[in-house]
Image (tube, rainbow over all chains, first blue to last red; front, side, top):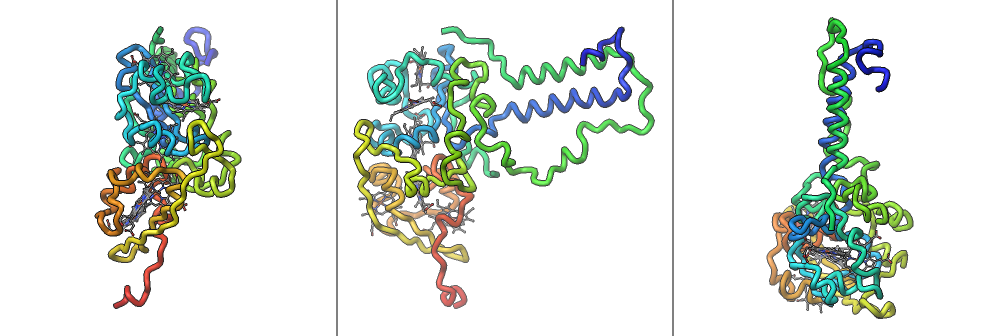
Length: 138
Length: 210
């Protein structure tokens, strides 16, 4: 674009083209800004994170189900089948509940790695990605 | 506990777009082209062949590009990309695009059934429940074996299903709304689009014609 700056650049041959390009970049961004490409069953948990100035936590089901059966979390550790429905907070985690059942430096890396869990875009609401109601077309 | 100003890529991108527009506006304007109607996007871009489906190239995006992870977040780049993990697993046509049932059967993965003991084996129950469906759709076969590979009885009984054949009313509408089978299917287990996996039992054709 550097040759296009006013004053020392030749006028563009087709002025509509540039404006159109700007518009398209904008449009593409609007589409891209959505969360349509998030991995199926990724869960954003954001009951408290935003308010506390942390990025929302993201739990990737696909990654964990390669290593554990559903039963370990949803029966033994007591995670209810509801995104955001377990009232998780850091005190419970460091006491070994919920994520803390494993992220304790023994089964998996420990809680000081804040940013690996708190990796969501600020203001992303609690949700399950790819769920039927969110997108009936896929 | 610093919080970075939420500069999302979309925002940066939009700003980029705007700045191009500003530079353009400041540039000496040519006389308007005679025939140009200046549409916002070309016909080819608006009328793509398959407007509503996710193109193959957009599946299993790496975290920095997936729209929910913050690419500016220090932890984001350390996360594994699903495509890397899935490359060695059997494929399917929906959800994660991984056939999780086959992956277990092939021993391509061996997820723990116990948090601590990697050797503990699941208690498998071999019991298929056939649910007759009114109309032309094939009947539904609910397989306990493929569920008890992953889940505990208490995950379904008694909260989602009373453990008694025929004691539960189930409809597609409920499943689409995230109830009954839809508690998992369409959220984490294979999505509702895979009709044939559930509607797997051919009807007796003679009965249909009656």
